[in-house]
Each structure stands twice: as C-alpha cells, then as structure tokens.
Image 1 (spheres, helix red, strand yellow):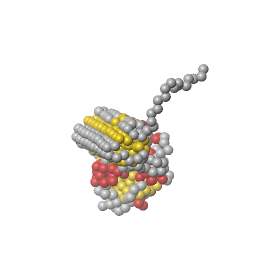
Image 2: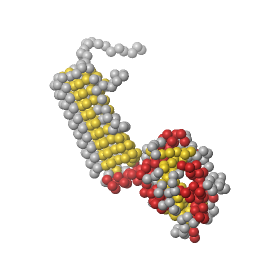
Image 3: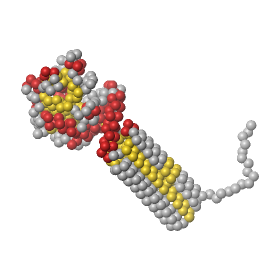
Image 4: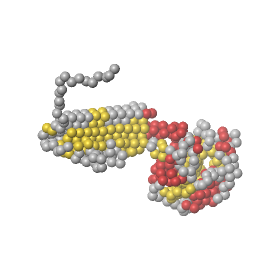
Length: 462
C-alpha cells in the first residue's frame, strides 16, 4: 500500500519577526523542517513532498535531497488549500501522512502509529489533551465524552464558548486514505472567520460518508508543540535539551552537573562513568570513552575522545569534516583549541592557549602553553616549549614540520616548514629553524647577545 508523506512548510511565521522562513529556524542546531524530515526518513514512503510558499527558494535549497520533492502554495490560503496543491503529486490509493514543518519533535513511532491507524481506510487524527488548548482546533466527539466517536474539528476562532471548553485539541497532523483525501479537499470552501480553506473540514465529510474517524493521542505535549515565536522556539529548545540530557543519564549513566545547562546539537555517544560539567555544547558527531571528564564551558564538535581523557574548562574542539581524535588519558586545556585533523595519541598534554591543526602528536608528547602546531607530525615524548610555533604557510602553500621522538623544543622558537627535527634533538630557546636538524643535535639559531656598558635610556623632554 503506497504511503505519501506530506510536510506543510509554506507559512511565513510573522510572529518570528525574522527574514528567515519559520521552518528554517533551529532547534538543537538543525532547522525545524530538517528535524521532521530526519525523523520520518525511516518511513517507507513512496513520495516525500514538502509544501513550500514563503521563502520557497531558500527553504528548498536548505533541505533538498534525493527522494524529496516540492510543491509550492502561492498564495497561502489555509491548510486545505495547501493539500489541494499537492493532490496531483500524491501516489497510489493507500495512505497520506500529513505533518507540519514547524513541529520538529514529532517521533517516528508516533508518525507510524498514525499510518497504522489509518491503514488506507480510516481518517486518523493526532490529538493532545491540554489544560489550556487555546489556539488549537477542538475535537468534537459524539455525546461530548472522551470516548465518543470523532464528529468534527472546530477551529479555535470558529468555536462557540462551549466548544472552547473542550480540552482535547487537534495537533495539525493526520493520516488519511489517499483517494478519499483527494475527493474531500476538492469540496472545501472558505466560509469561515479566517476566509481560508480548512483541512479540518474533511472530518465532517468523512463522518458523512461513514468513513471511521479515530483520534490517536500524542504521548506528550512536547512532541506536538509548534513554533510561532522566538519565545516558543526557546521553550522547545530547552524541552528538547532536557529530554536528551535525561536519556544520556538514564541510558548511559552520564553524570551531568546540571541537566538544565547542557546542549546537544548532534549525536553524542558515551561510555561508562562519563562526567560533563555545566555549559558544555556538543555538535556534530561526538563520542566519549569510559571515564572521560569534560570541564565547564567547553565546545566540542565532530570529535572522538578515548577513555580516561580529561578536557579541562573552556576548551574548544572543532573537527569540522576532518574530525579530531584524542587518545586515552590525554589532558587537554584549559583554554586549548583543537582544529580539524588534530590527532592526539595516548597521554598527550595540550595546555592553555595551545592550538593544534592538521597535526599528529604521538604518545606522551606535550605542548603545555602558548604554542601553535599546524601541519606537523610530532613523535613520542616530545616537549614543545611555550611560545613556539610551526610556520607552516609561505603565503601560497602549506608545508609540513616533522619532529622526531624525544625532541626538546625550547621556548619562543619558530620552525619554518618544510623542516625535519631528528629524534632526540634539542632546539635552543628563541631559535628560528629553517634547516633540518639531525638526530641528537643541539641547534641554536638566534642573534648573538650584546651588552653595552654605560648606555643611557632616552628621557622625555620636559
């Protein structure tokens, strides 16, 4: 039986007070629409259709992918009008699942429950019981009881005072028999307070035809909350982050110093006994091995951190597409920066105000303060002095620096790549190294110190 997935994403979102189309605003680092598309990627849908309108070009560019098609609703004359535009693109006579692009936290399980409840034969509505359902269409049931058959949905602005007392609201998401849906939306009119074509009017049509209408209760309010304002967006962000925090604590035993001050904007896998302090942000794909400890105020993006490593406070790790790898027992920070291609072996130390980019450091290597390592290969047990840098860029091309095992690089040195430092060599402090250094050699390259007796410092003229 064919399944059509339709996501409505045409609205302007005036209350967002933003030039950005509403469905492109972000929760946990991903657009609202991307959340819905990602959640439903596992559904076996023959057609995946996004209805765009306001900012259509921008929205379509943002989520374009194989298997996704777009239908434009111009102008926007209501939800029923939106589905009228998509009718020619619907496939088969099975089920059409209709979701909202500004309701990002709908779960795949809930969407699938709607599809199963419909089964190509029934109209299945996703509903939610709220203490204050203001703004929601009300579910009108036979006899007024919670178990009565669904008779209609009345939009909030068209509801009578008595109907507004109903606490069961319609979430805007449904699954309908595709053939019947095509027939029903063709009969819609805009004789209502908004002057719009309401998709909810098809409920009364289904009842009139004897098509069963069923209400499927959403598991919780968070899953069906939409975004219409920055305040709602912020509320949904915190709800989502709390859910993710609780899942990490319950499923992996992660110790979060304060779940309310935790942000996950991607995926995070954790071993046993992981500890995460406050105000940490995780983005992209991050994995933390057993016993990893993350200090406060760290940002970690696209990185793999092995068991027992300690990431001290205020460290910034950004692997971008190349990733960052940190070995077991490594000590990083505070105030360190690891950039794409940084690969640190076991027990490596990267201290305060040290930056590492596209470089490998073997086991036990140390750069404890105020240093830069770019495009470098560093051997085991190297000690890299404070203020030292690899000068890896000649203004046009990048070049590599190779430092052998057990090398000692003094403070304030410049290693001008391409250059190689042999194992066991020592670089005297303040040296600028432009030529290769052999194994075990001491290399000093600096101006001779001169002392001038009797020199007088210039004095200010009065």
